[in-house]
Image (tube, rainbow, N blue to C red):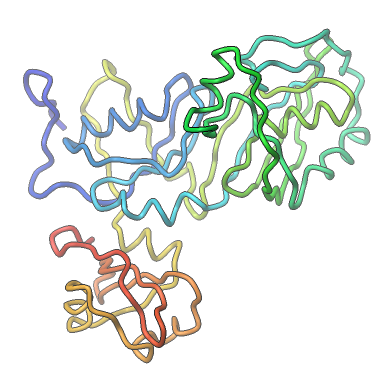
Length: 318
């Protein structure tokens, strides 16, 4: 891809791009930085994400491009998988390595797997988690992290999350600290920093996160993601987008529609219940695809039929 002159964003050949892009975010970059860079490289302002990563973290960012931004509604709530390193022996103000140390170091170097295991178990399943005070949760319209950095006493309420896996891996001593690798499968909205904090508290010592990598979002894996070069690292990069139909089919039940049904859906018409076939028992949204696998619409049940809640324009179907 060749950059446009005078700093203008390059234009994609033909129509505007539509789809979903899987990005392996590098450490030190904000999610907004990545979104802005993809906007420039693809020559479109219509780029969004299905959940941010902290600058310290690396791994999978799922971006919607063009009409793909409308699919993000169905992606943001997907479960996540993380690889983390938790340092036991001290807390920080942010529950990660970028915060200021709190209190004195507690010698964690002698901790054994047998001592840690029951406390990992207590943080699995359906739990009530108090998010980190530097989270992006809004309090009266203002982000919690902004209030915390302004010196306010931020008190966040516990919220329900599900941690289906919290498994310890390799453990290493660093002086009086114990660095514990872990793999976490969790529901959307779970804060891994808070798990690190709470594990340390359960063990009677501080704990904070020193490394975090998101390896999966629902069915999407970081192994299929690509690295987007930062500004100044070059612009000659292919950004292959996954088609809307292929993405929708991975997260929603699929209803194949014929040409007449696709035309009707394109004008906002409803489908009869008997047109839904195997999807007739579905409670939630379903993806209506044509015979070529292109996304026509997202449908939701309404009475005895199906109502389109998202209709993809003909020139954006893919």
